[in-house]
Image (cartoon, rainbow, N blue to C red; front, side, top):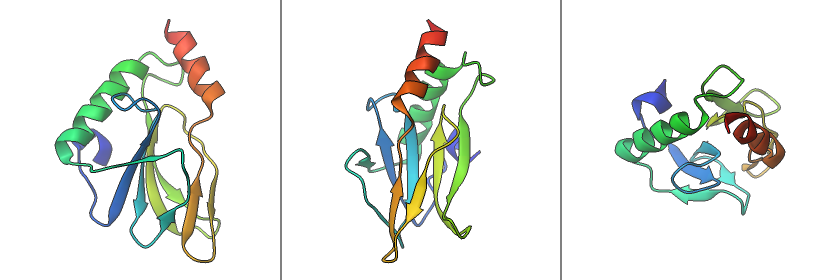
Amino acid sequence: DAFAEGKVLPGYRYYTVGPQNTPNAILGVGTSYTLKSEQWTERDMTPELLKKTVWLMNDLYSGTASGGGLFGSWVVSETGARVGIWYSAVGLTQVSVGSGGEVSVQPPNPLAINQLQDRLR
């Protein structure tokens, strides 16, 4: 709901992956963690930008076989600690948290994104 409402959560840094206007995923990482990835682009997220980005993503992926929408979820470590938040047409990803608070979150699988887009054509 926070994504759909454009609610930028305090204590999170936001990132996107994929095209800038219609990314494949939005990721928020808690400020007590450091994202270790060159694939994600940090965004200065505002409520207006979040709402617009979510609207464009929903418009793009609204006809997916997964039920016509995107998935929002907490990103949790192997121990169950909340390290971030996730929003994407692909509901699963791999997460690992290192000993120094470094977190690695895999972007959506490009094959899964391509398959979703092919179904919409």
